[in-house]
Every structure is written in structure tokens, then in C-alpha cells.
Image (cartoon, rainbow, N blue to C red; front, top):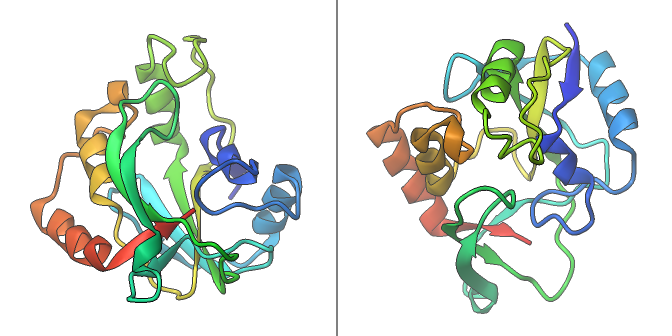
Amino acid sequence: MNIKLTEFALRHFDPKFGGTKILDMTPEKFQEEINVMQKIWMDGYAPFCKLWSLKNFTDARVGSLPITLENYQYLRSGYSARREQELPVFSRWLELPLGKPKAEYLMLVLYSKEQLDKEAMGDAAGLFSGGKPAYKEFDADWGVVAILGQSHLHEEPMKPETMIRNALGIKEGGSGVPLNREAYLRAVDFWEKNATVK
């Protein structure tokens, strides 16, 4: 089974990215490493999505932390988009004055080739391919769409704003999966107490 990084996942190797960053190896080396590791996958939020939790073999830091009395003063909020072409959504995050702790685990979020091809074909206007609407078939069985640095093995709930974007559909940068009320409320419960660390 062949796994490749998607173009969207390359943001994790950019020093300016706000989420989990991997700056001590190239995307090519990361991809090479994960393809030789043993894979124990969990089901994701849809049939085309799998999660893979593995020991952190990079210098990646945690991507989220519980909100505490000590860090509450560093909590920020605003509207942001993951890509220039997406609609900005309201989110919040921690801007810590000191560095983030190193992540013990990496949670990889993978989409099937079929879903990645569907999303590429659905991007008829080229909004999410840098203005190039030409369809390019994904050339692996699974594609990494996100890398999450964590201090634990279990899955963190998807952020509520990501669920909403997914429900808006491929045209708005989502996956097209309808909103699940129960999953949304579980996510709200988690993200009321935790925040992304930038």
C-alpha cells in the first residue's frame, strides 16, 4: 500500500504554517519513512478517511493544548482560512511566548485515492489548485492530508469549523460530508477546553 503526501499536506513543512510543523526533514524523507513503518489504522469521520497514530520520529511539537489558568492570557481568536481561496472561518488559538512541547505522537489523517481524485475533479474553477483547474490524478493508494502533533494516541475531535467547511462541500474547500450533529457537539465539548497552539 503506497502513501504519499498531498499538496495540501505540504503546509506542515512550511515554517510560517500555524499548525504542526515538521522542519527537521524534507517532505520526501518523511514520505519515505512512513511508507516503511507498520500501519495500524483507525476509521476516520467518513469511509474515505483513515487515521494513523505513530510515535513522533520528527521534531514536531504539539498542535493543541488544554486551556488553563496559566495559558488563558495567550488565547487569541479571529477569522482565518487554510488557503487563500477558502472562506475564512472563526477560530481560536494559543500564542505562547515560549516554545511548544515536543509531540509524543503524530496523528496522520489520510484520504483514499478515490476521494482525492473526486476533490481534484470537483475543483473545476481551480480554486484549490492555484488557479490551475486541470485535473491531475492522485498517484498513490492513500494521501496524507494532515499531520497532527499530539501528546496522546487517541484521536482529537475534528474542529467544529472544519466540520462546517466539510458540509459546505468541495467547492468551498470541504470534503462534502454532511454535518453530524452528535460528532459536532462532541467536538464543541473538546474544543471549548482545548485550543490549537501556533
